[in-house]
Image (cartoon, rainbow, N blue to C red; front, side):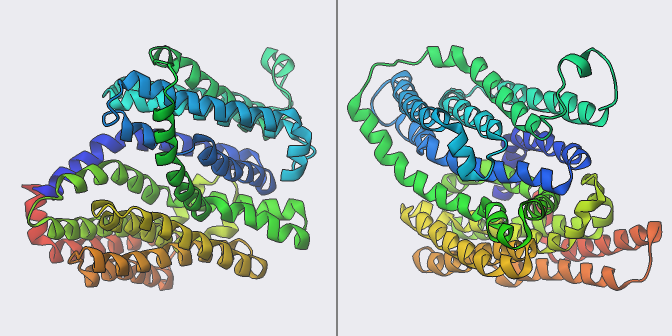
Length: 491
């Protein structure tokens, strides 16, 4: 059965990615337990800016590599070598500009007192960009164990340094031992997060050198031109996508700092970013789904009943993320302890907004099949651009009035707006019989159950028992309505 096949592919292809991202998420309680919101806001702000640079630095060449490695008529090692050379030039230019006068760069970004933060992240971004093509080659060569091993090594170095310098060091400032006396410097503080990232990215690049050295570095100007012509439009679309995903962190600081000061503005960034992490379960599922969905959709393209299959996938995707939303909301008083500092909990009211926004984001990935299957990918760029305009305008209007709460609403408005537009355009170009009653009804029912839970005047373990019962009711209702489909999935 098609849906059963997609479920298994989502589990297989998404597992290593989900596990890696989950391990990185485990740093959240470490960081929030050690750093006050304004300090954690620095981490979120710098990483938000880094996301934009990462897109520009890689120039869309990773996707271009996959496009031309089998279609250009050139040996794969030559395609890899020329792809790597493009990024090498990009990184050298970036490092040259950024490191030539780090102080001026740091001052422009608002970190004049800590230019080392910018230096460490600039180096990290360069190593990550140079690693993207050899990692793509491992995927192309079907070497999942080596691919996952290098990824986990990168994650292990990052987590290890964070555990040693952030968790142990920052929690034992009065201790006297060889590590604390000779290696640890408390004045670095939040900078250890960026140092860990730099060493992890450098280690990943070093592990990939054997793969890089197998490439052919004979310059092929025609191939380089093809790679750039294919990749640059994708870079523009990806840049617009990053605006939708991360610009709100930066705008919170920019728009609020003149009104409430740098420290308080960064604190709002920190609270917003930490509470955003509570949507991790939906985020991880969407990432795993993306790994499996695109090849699955293309494989079903020529089948007579493919539109019905796509509609069924959308329904079951909605069921899965809606159930996750209900779980998070009903157990929010438990899950909030993932953020190991009560100073961040004042932002928990934005979690329901962000969960619904993430459901809309998942719908967008499902709806994307219409412009991918009809070879009209320009519409993907249009949609990302529209989303960027909505993101910028709504954040600009709402953040000064509502703080980080305005950023949450802007995220929902952007993703929902993109969903509505994509649905309308898609149904005209390639009709898919989506069941709108279920797509809208299941999340609405789940949110309604959450509102019922909020009104029940019980606390403690009784509250958890009641919420467990409400979750069971929700799942039973879905299982009853989808009993025929469930039989097919479980058979």
